[in-house]
Length: 210
Ligand code: ADP
Image 1: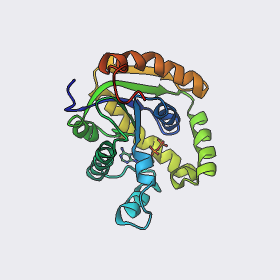
Image 2: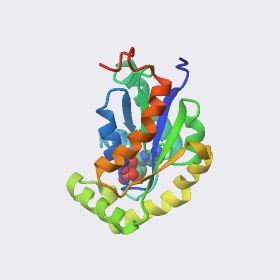
Image 3: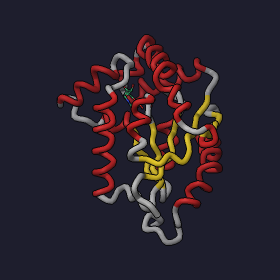
Image 4: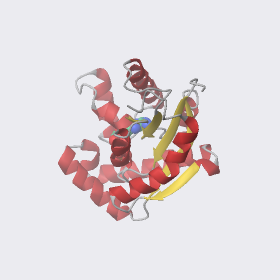
């Protein structure tokens, strides 16, 4: 199998829709590797230049500039592959929070073969607001704590991130209702993604299926 580019699925959707929740569950399943740009940024040393840059943007509900985002993400995923945490020959890469702009999608094309875009759909914006508010309390997140910042995050999603859907072929986009329980949403995602995973990896013989 060609390992030129990582075999990838995207978890796509507005802030608070549950991309991180699903990504973390999938990560526990052999053959899936979850990579979240939000988590990568939050794990930076807050006192470092990059950590400060991240805070500057996220605390306003804005996106970190594309060049910085793509560089940090690529360095991170590459390091994970060197450390054998991520095994590109055996693992489907599950991207959460990337790409968030068409420019990022263009750069990502160099590294990733996107097999499917799992678009988590939620028509009830108030429910997303409420989820984010609760998460902010639990996780001490500056980007979700203030209503104005949450509103800005939704605006940025509509203006910069949603157009990413047009970058990918219509047949690769899978819509999943995000309002069910985490288990229900997971079931729908697995229904769609497991056949793709089977088609691209021979799990019986792969090292990833320990
Ligand atoms: P959520 O899970 O609520 O959608 P994330 O944890 O993915 O949010 O992201 C938190 C913040 O990190 C974003 O508001 C943004 O400032 C920054 N960020 C995350 N991913 C990207 C990205 N691909 N491009 C630019 N900024 C990003």
